[in-house]
Length: 235
Figure: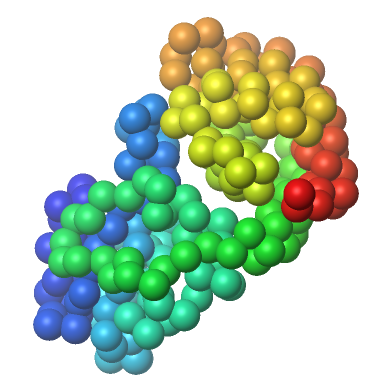
């Protein structure tokens, strides 16, 4: 399913209630790698009851089977009221998005750094715990370890961008520069993350036998980042 297919089917499902369909995240950035990156889509609609959910169910399933996250779907009122609940996502979206249909209401939408700090700490620790569990779940099989590195990269980049925003910096669009900047801020070696970025780009492919060492660097980096965010205070 293409983005054009998705928009067309969402229009049919929601009708006149559909206000906006927006592509955001890495797919809306300059370093998008189509064969690696997910398409993250925001849908804003006036009505979102069981009839609408039923109408869009087959579309959402097909979109997921194509390898993409389910569309983040909010009512218009929820979109306007949720920047304090999802500050990481809103900050990312406000900075990098492309409207595919309709018009996204942006007036009055802002991200408070205090809200951002709370979610960044929660997400950083959560991703660390998930990483540990995922490493164990690989059964120490090199191919599964490599697959874990590939699958987790985008998630870590989202957290990295939020960390730089906490420091009052605009995150670079380039993922290699992003990892390097966050490593310098938090005091960890960014080299393992850079290696996976280059692997995802096809610049320097990793072999499965190298995955365990890179995962060790991932783990050490995320442990240091969690400690950094936990101790972060605004100037």
